[in-house]
Structure formats: structure tokens, C-alpha cells
Image 1 (tube, rainbow, N blue to C red):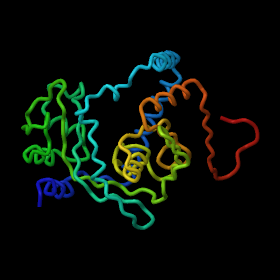
Image 2: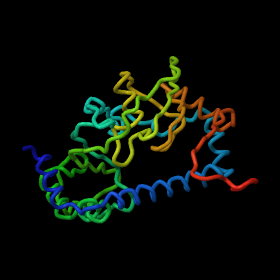
Image 3: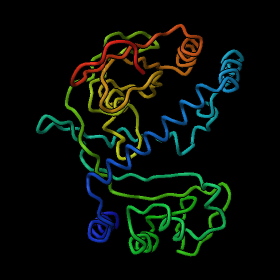
Image 4: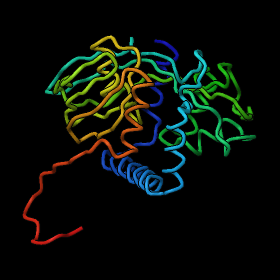
Amino acid sequence: MTVADDAVTMNKEKMVEETPADIERKRQLNKEKTAKKRKLAAENPIYQEIKRRELAEGKKSRSCNRKEDDFRNVDDIHTAVYYFEDDLRKVKPYYFEYKSFAKGRWLNRPLLEVFASEFRDRNEEYYRYAIERGLLTINDKPVTADTLIKTSDVIGHKIHRHEPPCTDEPIKIVHEGDDLLVIDKPGGIPVHPAGRFRHNTVIHVLKKEHNILKLYPANRLDLPTSGLMLIAKTPERAKDIEREMVGGKIRKEYVCRVDGEFPEGNHL
């Protein structure tokens, strides 16, 4: 048994139990908060003007300015091993290392204190164990529970990752050009890595199935939503699509199924 396997076993025994309802409630709350922030930003005329100016000037996004060895650019698609069972797409468990730059509120605080207070899906005893076994690191180096987090530190956490399943419906390619994919996204799968999902996402499935190194989704649909998506193959094409969206040249329509009948007249 490896160190990581040992940590997984201990974590299963010691971690704070959460019911499916608790997890779903948290996910929905975070989703609502994110949607509210995006809506407020999109409706802000100052934000809209800055966005138009950046696009007109061809300003690069932060992701385009990253160095080649930036940890956020690590390609781990080779660890994605899919299989199908009970009408679901599943991913075999794999080793993964979460990494993040130190946040402002973490600075000059002990590593153990930060993890025990901010990442409460596991308890303090587990984090002490993870630090002792080298599963928690700072700048890829082993630390102690009392190590203080400094500016620009990169925090790492090695785990054995188990992703939830998603729909086994295929992701159909409606159109493919040199720099653009148009897909028919099925409901029941998220678009990009977030939360508990990484490989079981539209972007990673397409990368794996079609051997594509980089993809840039121009629009996003929620996990339960199906429909057409524009996915650029180059950052330049993604920028062109974003410019067209900001300029109102791309229209989106949504169709939903309801239970019952809407009252007559216009209602919001």
C-alpha cells in the first residue's frame, strides 16, 4: 500500500460525513453565488466598456501570459481512464495533486490552521497525518504543521481522486473546422473541471477522445443543460468569438420543459 493509499483509507475513516443532500445544497449555493456575481458584472456598464476596450486592443488574458511550466498548465489527461456501467460514464480513480497560490487571508498563518479551518471536508487529524507523510507541501517541499504561508507560495495537496459518474450519452460533433468545434452537449455532464469533476467533463472527454491538446469553450452550459456549444481550438479564435458575443452578433435561445401551464400574458 502506498502513502497516498494509506491516506485515503484513513480519510475514509476520519473525514466528516456529508449526506448527498448536504453536498447538493453546497453546490447549489456556490452556483447561485457565482451566477449572481457574473450577472452583476455583465450588467455593469463600466465592466462592459473595459471588456470592449480589451478586446479591441487584443489584450491577452491572464491564462495566455502564463509560463510554460506554470502548474496550472499541467496536462494530466493520460490519467483519464473511462469505462461505462449502468448507463453512466465513469472514471477509474487516479492520483492527483491540487495546487493553488496562497490567498491573501492565508498569509502568515500556519499551514495546519489554514487547512483545518478552510477545507472542512476533512478533519484536523487527517491534515496532521497528510503533513507528516508529505502529502501537503509548500513549493513542492515537505513542511511542518507550524510552517507559515508566505506571499507567492504554491500550496500542494496530493490525493487519490474519485470522481462522480456522469451521463454516458456521447458528445456529438455538429461541425469541425481548423479552429472551431460545434458540439451538441448532452445533459448530465459539466463543461469544464470544477469542484468534484475533472476528467468527467466535456473538455476532458473531447481531449481524450480526439487527441486535442488545448480547447477553449466560448460558451458554457450547466451540468443538467443540453444544447449547442462553441469550442475554439486556438486562443485567437476564442477571442474572436468573445468579441462577437460582446458585440451582440451571437444570439442564444433556451427551451425548457415545465410542469403545468403558464398563465396568460407576459410574466417575469
